[in-house]
Length: 110
Length: 125
Image (cartoon, rainbow over all chains, first blue to last red; front, side, top):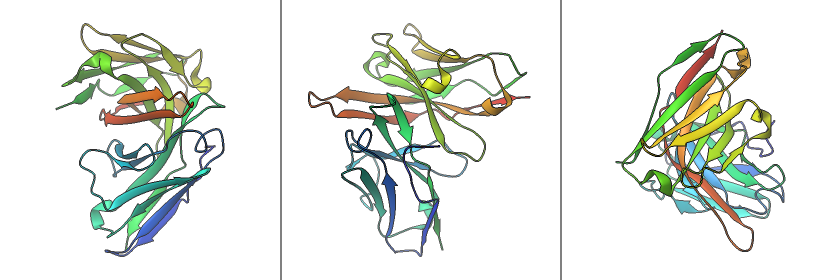
């Protein structure tokens, strides 16, 4: 049972904007920087956003990250079919002294 | 390019041990940490452990303490993760990843993994 909560699924049509939330607490999101990973089917995770809102190398600016208090979010604008994947937020938790991943959100392009 | 190449799939009996290797290339091995993450079938990502190849310092998730050992061989730029006392629920894909981590004076911790191996499937049966 993760300490970071994400919606299990999100969807949109091509070109739409989709937002994924990540809810945590003062010991994780409230204290440290949030990262987002994309996992395409059958592949290893890939770093999308690090340090709350910084793009990893080669990541299009259709993806953007933000953080406020104990929550974070990932937005995908101009949704494309190749964005169909699982998305995970992740952050260091000071209380657990561990890195924690969110529950994951499956994005479907309708 | 920077990459991590992991060892091949393993099939183990319950109670046995498994050691997964992760060979780095394209970058200075001691300049980054190595993190181990696993993913059970149809499940999410689970952080297991971290090691600094430069200092040898390690951190292991509470869940795995006493069962997991992470090491590195800087002469071959290879990291290893050993998991002992295997159970059926250890069946998973095990990933190594290059990480960057640092903490500001304010206490804010930056930690992320930017290069991932392709994963090693471990089946316990």
